[in-house]
Amino acid sequence: MLAKIRPATRQQGFTLLEAIVTLVIVSMLVTVLMQALGQAMSLRTRLLRFEGENRVAGLQEAWFRETVAGLQRDLEEQGEGTLGTRDLMQYSTPSPLAAQGFSGVRWWLDGGRLHYADTRVTDVVVIEGPLSDAAFSYLDETGNWVDEWKWKDHKFPPKMIRFTARTGRGTLDWLVPIMADGLDPEKLKLDEVGSSGI
Image (cartoon, rainbow, N blue to C red):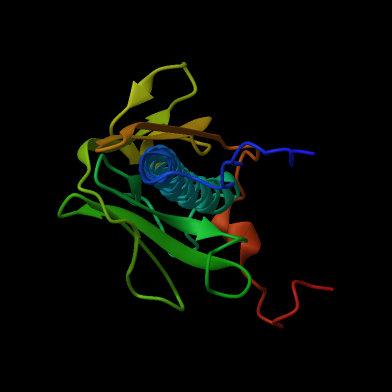
């Protein structure tokens, strides 16, 4: 009997050409994935920076609103006293940023930046800027916006205070309604006994 001759079996595995093609495809996939990952990381960084800038802008506006909303005439102001101009505001408030309790505060514009001070801090730069066309304005009892507020011309504080400015990120337009009519400084002073008669 003749022995059966088996055909030669092909060895399992990749040829050199198949291995090179596979490596080329894998390297192309890795390159595409790395580019996508780089773009995603860049987008994440931009979003985090944008979120951080928005958070800071929100805090800046909240600080301004908090101190301005409780505006009262300065106890030391008499006669010709000025609440504010386009570049400066000074008044008393029960909610200063740093001082404790009722305190005089000051907001002003200098060098394209917005500054703040009270009895505890002498100069805090709230907005680094550069700010352009920045100004404070005041809504009077007739509904008109004015650039200067002198106490001798008004019985009560302004109905609203506005701060506007242009920054590199856009326009600021902060409107703060003044809820109280304000107190007469004479009524806030203690009597001679030092206890307001209580």
